[in-house]
Image (cartoon, rainbow, N blue to C red):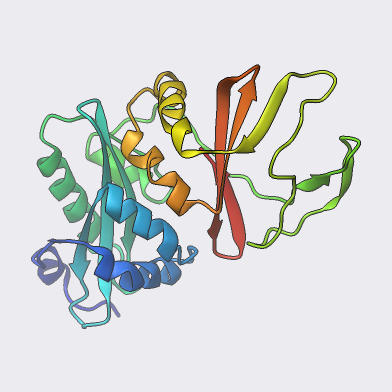
Length: 237
C-alpha cells in the first residue's frame, strides 16, 4: 500500500540539498539498489545544485534530483531518485517540472534509464544517443608489457605503476597529475566534451583516488580518474 496519496505527495515542498544531506541521499541510492556513493554525492552537491523532497513519514528523503550547469551551453540533470514506497505517484514528474522551470531557457540534457525514459519523453525530451556502463577486472601490466595477473577492484589495488614509460611502439607516457596540469586538461576537455567543465575538473584531485595524465613528447593528450563506488572502482574522465 502506498502512503500518502498522490495529491499530498505533489504538494510536498521541494528544497535545496546540501552536504548535510549526504547520508539521506546515500540511503535513497541504497533503497533503489544503487551504490551508496556518499563520496560522489559530495562532489555533485559542491559543483552542482541538488533538489529534494523530504519523506512525509520522516524517514529521510522521498526523492532527489541534481543539476550540473555548464555555463550557458546547457545544464545536465541527474540523480533522479524516488524512494520505492513513493514510486509512481507523480513525484518524479514534479521534480522534473521544477528543474525545467528553474532552468528557464537553458537547454537541459540527461541520461535516461528504460524506466524513466517515458516520463522524460512526455516532458519533451528526445533521445539523441546511447550510453553504456561496463564492468570487469583489469589485468596488471608486467615489466614486459604483457598481463601478469588479475587486479582486484578494491581501493588498495593498483593495476598499473603510477608512471608508465613508453613502449617501443608509442611515445606516450603516463604519470600522476600535478596541480599545474589543470589548464591543459581544461583545454583538452573542452572540444571533446563540448562545454567548459573547469568547475568539475578542479575538484577531481580531491575527489579521485588517482588522477593520471598521458603525455606525448611533453604535450598532454589525455587524462583519467579513478574513484570508489560501492564494492568497485570507477574509471572515468
